[in-house]
Image (cartoon, rainbow, N blue to C red):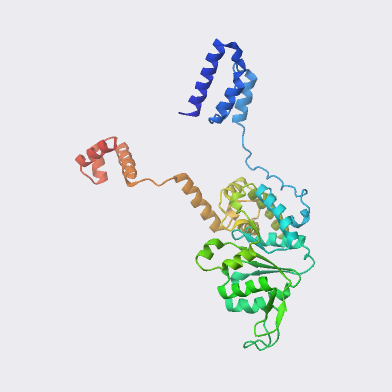
Length: 393
C-alpha cells in the first residue's frame, strides 16, 4: 500500500471521528505524527487555507542551486589545541570526535595505531599528536615502511656500524636515533616482514636496540605512532603480523573514515585545493563548474583526499579560463566517473529471457505486428515466434 493511500485513509478516519465526536478535533497533531512515521513527507490541516497551499507548492518546487557554495569548515575553537588541526579541512562530525581523542591520546605518551585507507590523512593526524605531546620540541620522523625491502629496512631503521657490510664506510644513525626524544611515525606498518617485527617489538618492550653489526646497545627514547591501510586482524590470522606487536602498538587506536563517508567535505576540500593551486600557479580560477562538482560528489575516491588533491592540481594546470571545466579534468577520472554513471543508469543487468522478450517486442513494433516479417528478421520460424509471443504474454 502506498504512502498516499495510507495518508488518505488516516485523514478519512480522522474526518469521520471529528463528524461524530467534535471533541476529537485536536486529533490532527497525533495523526500528523502517525502519518510522518509511515513515510508521508508532509501534511495539511483541513480546511486548507490558500496561503498554506502556496507555501507547500513553493517548498516542493524550490529550485536547487546549480552550484551551491560549500559550507565553511566546522570550528575547532572548542578544542584545546585547535591550531594543530589547521591543515585538516573538514566539517564532518566524525572527524571532530577524532580530534577530541587525538588531544587525549597525545598527552598520554603511549603508542598509537592509526587505521585508514591510503590518502585519508594518517600522517596529518600523527603530526597533530606529536605537536600536542610533551615531545613537540623534539624531532618528528615519518617513514613509509612499505617502500623498503626488509633487509634494507633493518639498516635504515636501526642504523649500522662501520664495516658491518660492504659499503658501510662509517657509522650511520637509523630512524630511531634520528627521532630520539621525539616521535617516529611508521606508515604502512602491515608491510613489515616478521624478522623486522621481532626487532621492533624488542624496541617497544626493552626500550633499547642495536645498530646493525654492533654489539653495543643504545637506549631508545622515542614514541612510536604506526599506521596501516590493512586489516591487521586478518594479517594476524594469516600469520603475517605478530599478535604481541599488534597489542603493543594498539594501546590507543584511531580509525579515520574514507572520503566517500564524508560527502560534505568533498566540495569543501575541492575549493580549498582550487584556491591553493590557483595561487601556486599564478592563475585566476575563481570557481568550480556545476558539472565538475557533480562528478566529484558522485565519485568514490579510492585514493581519498590525496586523490582529490591530485585531480584538482592536475585540472588547475590545464584550465585556461576563470572556471574549472570538465575538459580540464584528468582522463582516467572522467572515464571512471562515466562508468559509474552508466552503471547507475543501467541498474541490475537483465536476464537473457528479458532481453529476448524486449527484442521481440521491438521487432514486432518495427514490422507493425507482421509476424512473418518479424520471424524472418529474428531468424526463427513463424510458428516459433507465435509460441514465444504466447510465452511472454
